[in-house]
Length: 136
Image 1 (cartoon, helix red, strand yellow):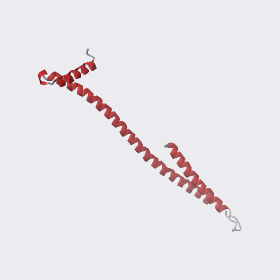
Image 2 (cartoon, helix red, strand yellow):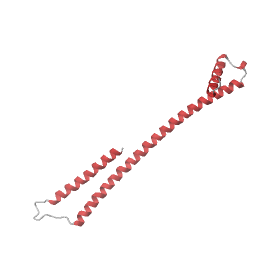
Image 3 (cartoon, rainbow, N blue to C red):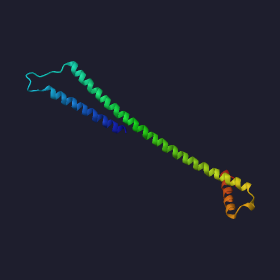
Image 4 (cartoon, one colour):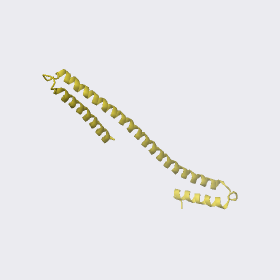
């Protein structure tokens, strides 16, 4: 982004400088007049200051556009990063909660109330909880 802004600034600066040079050259030599017109010091300074003001205005507009573009890019990146972290945290918490709920259910439910498939899932959940807690 900085490189693009620098290149755009240099292009605008060179165009403004080129226009200024062409204007000076076109005003300096006029063969149809008997004597050459000269620019007074006050006129020269006012032209230079006007050119400088135009260049600063163009640079300000480009900088404002770059700032808006950069802010949007940072905002989108922060949002994507927050979504990824939230998704990872929610997945980890959901796995922990699922194992804890399964273990609690296994302790609270009578063996006659469960089917063989449920009993297998409960035993697997208890084994996973014990492995996570370091019980052998």
